[in-house]
Structure formats: C-alpha cells, structure tokens
Length: 153
Image 1 (spheres, rainbow, N blue to C red):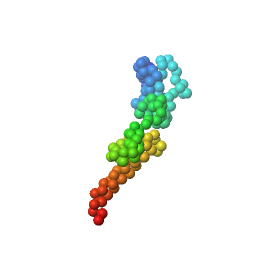
Image 2 (cartoon, rainbow, N blue to C red):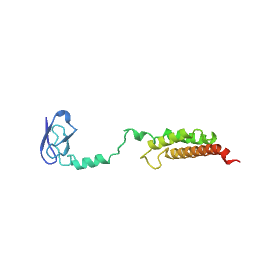
Image 3 (cartoon, one colour):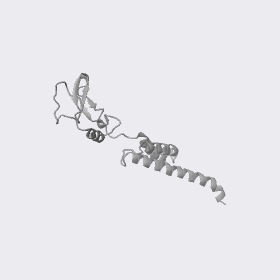
Image 4 (cartoon, one colour):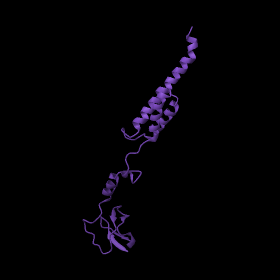
C-alpha cells in the first residue's frame, strides 16, 4: 500500500499496482499521479490541479478515428456519383436525373456540418443542380408535347 498526499495535503493511499495512474482525492476532487513507493513527491513533481487537467483534456483534438491523422480527407462517393450522373444526363437527355437528384441530396446530407471546402461538397452541389435542371427540362418537354396538339390549329 502506497501513502501519498493530494495537492491540498490530504493523505491518500493506493495499491502498488496503481503506480503511475491518476488518483482523485475524494475530499477536494484534485487529481494526482500515484507515486512509486519511496518516491518523495516534491512540489514540482505534483500533478497540476484538476482545472488544468480539464483544460488540457479539452484542448486535445477530438477525432472519431484515432488514426485519422494518417489519412487524407475522406471523399464522398455519393457526391462523385451525382456529378457523374449529372454529366451523363447531358448526353442521355436527362434520363438519370431522378437518380442524380437522389445521390446529390444524399451526399449533401452526409457532408452536412463539414467544412465549406470539404472534398466532394462542390461535386454534390453541381450534380444536384444538373439533375434538377435536367428534370425540369424533361417536365417542360413532356408538357409541350402534351399541349402541342391543343396549341396547333
């Protein structure tokens, strides 16, 4: 059993297996590193107060993947599909426009809350725009074909 003091001088104790881990004083809630047996803890060796621990923890980057720094920015494949279908729709007379709109909206939902210049955001917007323009063109064309007999004498 190791006996040591917290930053306010209260006596704490811990098992030998807990050397080097953090211990929290139940009275003052301060956090201290459990010293090795026989180590004299000088004032400079003490762990910083809890407020400093919390500030240090809050300043750490929060990432979902701890290995995220190893990879470049993730690409949104739905945005690429929307852009490709939008371009192909120009050749195929807008036939894939409903699918293009679907993938464009899906990509924008995936990229919601990301940075303004996130990879794939522009592709999703351009693909969605092309899909909407093509769908509007098809609707206008169908309406003209249906109304053409009534408009012609």
